[in-house]
Image 1: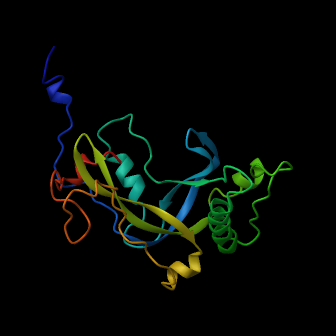
Image 2: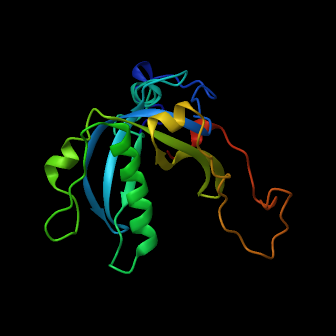
Length: 203
């Protein structure tokens, strides 16, 4: 086995060049929308990219620079459906996100199916190419003993609210840790915590 592999065709990686998206409000375009079902539950999944401001085209640039050709598109948001009729909280979050999309786009209306277990395929398809606001925040991750932060969608807002700064970015979300560990002023235990380069992020 050759440890260096096909050296001449290996793409050089410059550490630190993988830019991380700052927390904040962004205007995004829905590029693809469909219902998705995994072990975590059923959801309305949208794939998107930022279309205005300094970070316009952020996810496309990231995709084109990917080192692993199997790497998937990173600009995704899963709007989960309630698990049952009593799951009022999840249903309310979903309604808030849907309202943001509908209010941002004249004539767009998500239509529930007859059985109430989702939305009609055509009304979902109609979301593609439409704009909406997205509020991004930081979440901590851990993999193989390493930790770091990545930026992801918290929730959707109307385009107008994003433009007017009428939104709130949630606080950085930290992983839950053993209460016996000594935490620093940010609630993060110092033992075993290593700040790592963005290029090592699994996202």
